[in-house]
Image 1 (cartoon, one colour):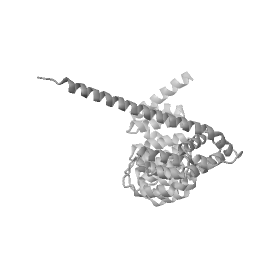
Image 2: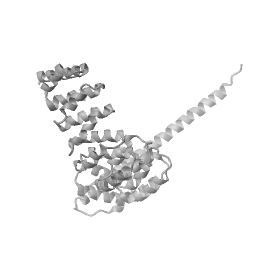
Image 3: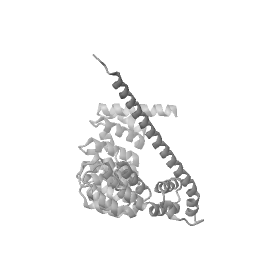
Image 4: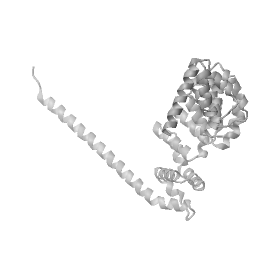
Length: 347
């Protein structure tokens, strides 16, 4: 077999040349990128004092300077927004960011690159650029699939207070409860009336649960009426979320509404009502707590024993150790008494 070593040599030479060319291209791209970053850093250093001076009312600002490089303007606005809690300063940053970044962001939202579009959505939310809401709403309505970009667009529109997205977001149960909650939590307080109106109109349990979560997360005790009304819902998941929200609020106006939950056919409700009684330090359910101390579910017995110990005291739990008719109840009461004794010993 004859081997033509000249062909092999040429092949190796060509491959080596291609590698050198590729390396040269990579190096050149890195040089250009570094040069661009140095230029942006220099521009940032030049504009920062002028921008800060403008924000504190010490001088005027030529917005045209910010428009020359939107990445520099974006970084300036982002850095200052994250470094101050002064609402007046933040509002000034937001208005300046909109003036400088509106057009670049409108173009970027049409960019074929997914990361570019997603990045802009985050910044629109951060800078509260409500002037871009109509454009986002149009794009949102045209997107047929609920991919990650459409979900982020929903979050961004929610942060801008656009309640028109509610029917589309909560039209079914195709998303996780975490997403539903995330969207609702981003709405500003100014949207509360519209959110309440939608809550009262819709029969979508995902929205109802997310709305109740929002009340608890915002510690909005003034909305306890909606939460207590939800305790009478026909939907188990809504009643469970109402119990959780009351626990998060550490407050309710009508504790008597909790009584039926001690007799619920759902063990989660029996467990949660015991936890709620403990959190609110309610003393009128002694008999009911003693009853579910002998529950068939371990978690219910556990919650009942913990609540009896904290609300009624160790003496009551000791009484159940000796006198409860259910052996599992006596064991759970004994377990909690032992835990309490060890805690006191190390206190």
